[in-house]
View 1 (tube, rainbow over the protein chains, first blue to last red):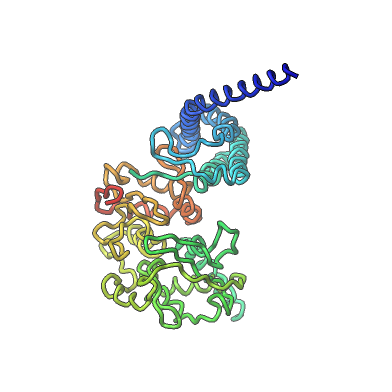
View 2: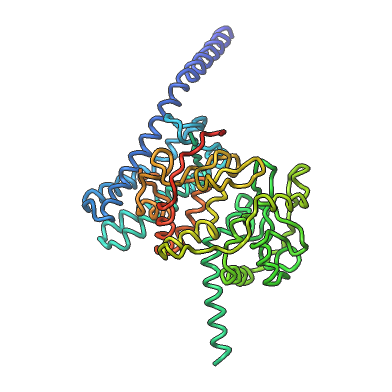
Length: 159
Length: 278
């Protein structure tokens, strides 16, 4: 009997201890999550830029291909960039991740999946080498993929 | 032969009307997307500093929509901000911009709207306090702040400039969000497109004059065209929020219209924007 109570107490103590640990680490976690999120988005911007440069006749196809390949990977990771409790302004204070991301998580996932599918389509188009198809896929990814998410789930902070 | 001809003329008018209605963004405000409302059936909440307005049904339903409106009544609504029953609209309906739409374009928009499936959905009353809700006061507001009349092209300017001016000031009504408003909710003409610290839903709207510091002075015409086409900024970001909705419309314009908008915006006097909260 005694050992069972002792075990229970030990368990409770452990649980409290762990809760304590998880709340303190959570604040640091959030900071890291926000930083990682912004960096990933900026990376995606660079990859978009590589494709755009190719379409504008200012960059080469190999770099566009790498950019599109990266986008097929990073767009799939987006849900991991938004763990619960990480809303609010970004580290540089110019955008807010809206609460609707978490209150309407399935809709958010739909928007993310749309972006990922469109990134896949862009890579297919680039591999085909058909410039008109690349441009159409690129515009669709930007407007409806990236823009689709930003319209519903992101807000600009005017300074 | 004649019926065939007039049929294709009617189809042309409708296609033109669809293009114009898209440029004017009618569907955006007149659809309650958040609650999966029917297109153009109204009911979308528009929060303003004066209260919350609910857009009306503009499908051709005869009871709850605009199905019984004559061309004259439709033109008067757009041109003068007056309902068929003679009451004034609140300027949340951008008639101060739409007054500049040409008669032919307004008629084409009506033809398009009347081709839509009628939706039976009664209009929801606005949620605005007294005395704002007294519509007759709008008569005074109009005397002070409303200059009616169609768009006047500047003959000394290029065709692209004039087309852009017409799109920006009349149809696309850019100034309704991008121009700051005075205490009476009227846009301030000397700060045209210089940014609005208190835009729709209380959100700040950026300066789109060519000011190099806080406008879009560093943007090329191509940058503006790209933004209107795909929502992409020169930093390879993609706009969201209300402008994300607008891009759904501007992406369906043709390249000549997007270029015209860019030409016009680049030709505006640069204005340094206001700080947030004025």
